[in-house]
Amino acid sequence: MNTATSLSVRDPWALVPSLGNLDAYISAVNRLPMLTQDEEKLFARRLREEADVASAGKLVLSHLRLVVSISRQYLGYGLPHGDLIQEGNIGLMKAVKRFDPDQGVRLVSYAMHWIKAEIHEYILRNWRMVKLATTKAQRKLFFNLRSMKQRLKSKASDANAHRNTLSSADIAQMAATLKVKPSEVIEMETRLSGGDVALDPQNDDNEESYAPIAYLADDSGEPTQVLEGRRRDAQSGEGLVQALEVLDARSRRIVEERWLKVNDDNSGGMTLHDLAAEYGVSAERIRQIEVAAMKKMRKALETTA
Image (cartoon, rainbow, N blue to C red; front, side):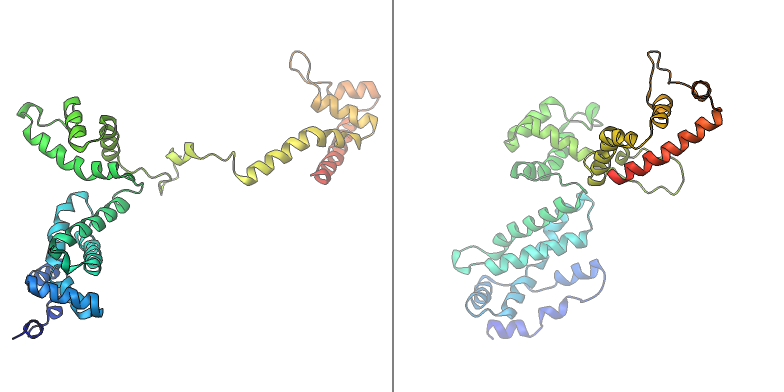
């Protein structure tokens, strides 16, 4: 019986449930048949030379258990196991597409790197709201710091077993092992130990909140604020001068004495009664003149704006 016939006796696709829980999926993929080296080369050549989708499916299905095994190594990051497997499967499919059977390397060895790469990218995108590792050195730190800390804690004495922070010796040892600077180890440890903080938390109560958004917001560069500031500056400078020019001499002096004049002792100008005595009218008449003058000035300011 040839290879194609032997695998068609029981179609591997039928073993993978289309719906169900994660345990059922893992149980199914662990029952999928493994390919021999000759079968692997045969299907890989069919895929490369004939673009045979069925052969690609056989290669992917026979290595799904590898994805499950690798994904278990990353459960400590608190992300769903099913999502880790899904991302790893994407890496497996990429490896199958690029696999060259004539290089003398088994697909399991080649695919392992692609599977880990996809899982790494998923973790870096989703472990925190803010991306922690961007450079190659930071990625190496991110995925090795946790495991190295566990090994160092297991070697520590009972007296220091409760210690969560890294000592200077630990930092130096980790930096030398990972070939990075001690300062980079300290920075990554600090970033990993910190949690996400909501900038604008949702509070159901009416109490005043002092979330980071309250003191991080900067409206100085906001376009409407900039335009409003320019308008205010123009009105308080040249606009005010133009507005005063529309008044008669008496109204202008009343406004200047009541609102614009400041004495050496920080007191204002003349009172309503002082102005009333000077012009020989009542204080109420001075107030009426002041109100009318303010309306004229406001109208003039609106025109210049």
